[in-house]
Amino acid sequence: MNKLPNYLTIARIVLVPFFILCYYTGLPGWNYWAGGIFIAASLTDMLDGYLARRFACVSKFGKLMDPIADKVLFTSALLLLLAWGKVGPVICIILIGREFIISGFRQLAASEGVVIAAGWSGKLKTIFQLVGISLIFLENPLFSLWNIDMGIILIYISVFLSIWSCIEYMVKNKEVLKG
Image (cartoon, rainbow, N blue to C red; front, side, top):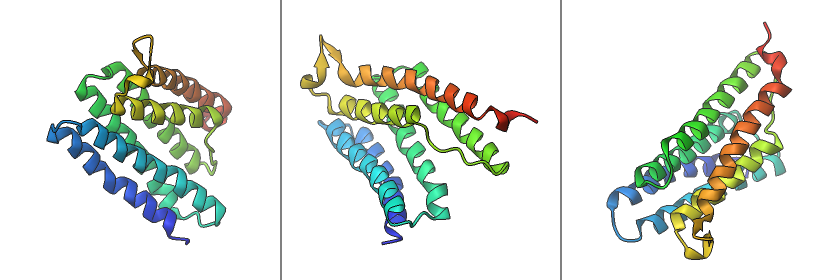
């Protein structure tokens, strides 16, 4: 059981090329396949974290690879949505840029012996991003409100939460930046 979270992290990374391949096939309904793979990969993230904490099997591999797997998955999704014309470059720059900033900040903190746990605003950002991206890929009219795609609305909310959580991380942990 103690290796299952790591296998799930590896599975998330392995799913990314298949997710991308859906776009490049250009086949009708590619986006539904991509959405399904994205959702499955995202669920492995929730499950591996739960299992690692539940069974006290947090590993160095998991600490390193889990955030990398997340960033590869979400960055791939955002870039596919950009190529597909569903989101603009500014949204991608903000969302991906925030991930670089927080990763760098955490790395700096770790070098000082400080562990920065994920805050609620960051977790909420991730949920809005996950659901928003999924809804955009699934393109279901049931998910639109006043002819506005709910996925896009959720992505805009995740952009706001990305900025908010980035500022929150910096302010709460400003001592890491001193010296």
